[in-house]
Amino acid sequence: MIEAPILVAPTGMHRLAHPEGEVATARAAASCNTIMVLSFTSNCTIEEVAASCDAVRFFQLYVYKRRDIAAELVKRAERHGYKAVVVTGDTPRLGRREADIKNKMVAPRLRNLEGLLSVEVESGGGSNLQAFASQTHDDSLSWKDMAWLKSITSLPILIKGVLTAEDGCGSGLNGVIVSNHGARQLDYAPASLSVLEEVAEAVAGSVPVLFDGGIRRGTDVFKALALGAKAVMVGRPVVFGLAAKGEQGVRRVVEILKDELELTMTLAGCPTIDAISRSHVRTEQERLRSFM
Ligand SMILES: Cc1cc2nc3c(=O)[nH]c(=O)nc-3n(C[C@H](O)[C@H](O)[C@H](O)COP(=O)(O)O)c2cc1C
Ligand SMILES: CCCCC(=O)C(=O)O
Image (cartoon, rainbow, N blue to C red; front, side, top):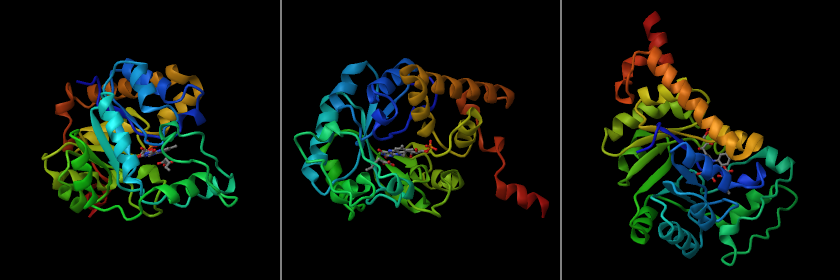
């Protein structure tokens, strides 16, 4: 269905990077024939992104204390042709982002929420995003809430932010995304690549396992696929491409990754994605063991 196993990860507030925001990213993803996961905290609306071009898109969900708002946005995504919900499980509260506090970070308008919620928040002199998240995100989020989510949508649901085998196989959802939120949430959370294999083994092919975190080269995509991911998602490089050259910049980022993946496959003797196997990579642990 998609040209390469490289998706656009949900990242918030694309107008911080480019005036056209998520619409430019969506067009780039569409022209690369890949899937964009639209962030719940986008600047462009669900409808604007849907109307920008014809492509497969997923919608990322933050579960708000105000469940009616979360449900309303999922309904809007469903109505506008988004094909899956990606529920982010690792952000019941925002991690302590000291740079945002120091820089007095102010989020640009989250237009999806207009008419639903006042986005004027007092930051107390620190990060306005952090103050906003603590007012809105439901910090009691747990597995039991997945039953509620299933009850409000017929779309497939993927859980993002899984870092253990136990969470991977216990979700009862339609897909698992191994991620530590780009190391933006909890210091000392494991690097997502270091736990990918154990999660993939536990899930054992029952649902697709996706991966994100630190994908910067085609070789990184290859490593993640060898360790059990069906596809990867890319966060920061897409935002950097958007900031540098808008739609064209995002397209270039995805193309570079795809070209590098193809080169890596050829040099590793893999004519197809399915030919990438566990034996193509050696982990740090295996390397150390080989010295013993
Ligand atoms: C600026 C920024 C904003 C992000 N916003 C969201 C978001 O709105 N929702 C979400 O689930 N993850 C968000 N993430 C996390 C990404 O989806 C992804 O997990 C992470 O960026 C992957 O790592 P990478 O940046 O090394 O590719 C964000 C990450 C960044 C860098
Ligand atoms: C309130 C969440 C903001 C978007 C996000 O998830 C991030 O910045 O990592």
